[in-house]
Length: 330
Image (cartoon, rainbow, N blue to C red; front, side, top):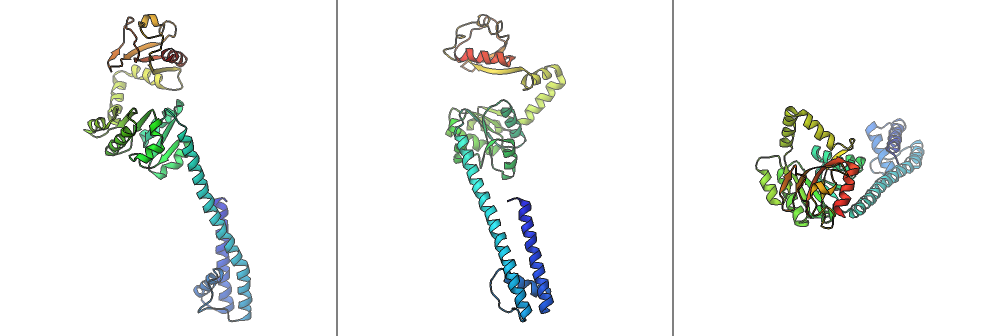
């Protein structure tokens, strides 16, 4: 039943009450308030006390009011009850379906907080086809999440049961970007205790919060103000470089920068960059190599050797990067 239908039924009921009251004013000479009182107790069938019809015409009028008004009132009440029950059932079934879909996710990302930063992160992941679940405790944002087609959990992300519903034990990473740094610390602590292998990125806006978040278990801590300031400074000093990086990170451009992990079984293991064919065959530029020890090699030379566990920071066309991922993982 639509809202317009409900409002129409309510409007008709109001008209019946008003007409019933005016009828008693005319037939009995009562005041409008007394007539309204008489109409209401008639329609609700609570029985008469200090007021009751005194003339045959009033009694006939009351019988007609009961037959028409009470029947219609019962119809309105049952219709409203049906709307409420159907809405609750639909909500329960929708919630159950959503949880089943979340349980099927593997290697997904959990975004805690759907504010301005969380929304941007979610949009970026969705555009790349990466599975994600959003945890948000503000019910006012749920319609926006549903409209955008996101999987979501309504609740406090610092609570274990909420993160478990989001599938944290199967997740690949978590982003804590709620408005409070203190809450991000609690979220990070809880997430790390539930999944020691989870990659956690946390928002730390206040001075001193970075070390607390790192001690709580975050792998990376980012300040939106610092990132924004750096980006604006680079735009002023090196506008062309900034434009190039922006283009490389946009989905509509076929150029992309990716991280590619080298598996122990990969044919790339033991080869120098010059012999790997990455540049010659795939036309990919290896910007940096991160060793398994954490050492970062920027602008590696052609003679740099590739080892198992290395992460190649590569720049190239998406199709070529897909080929590199196959080579590195096989």
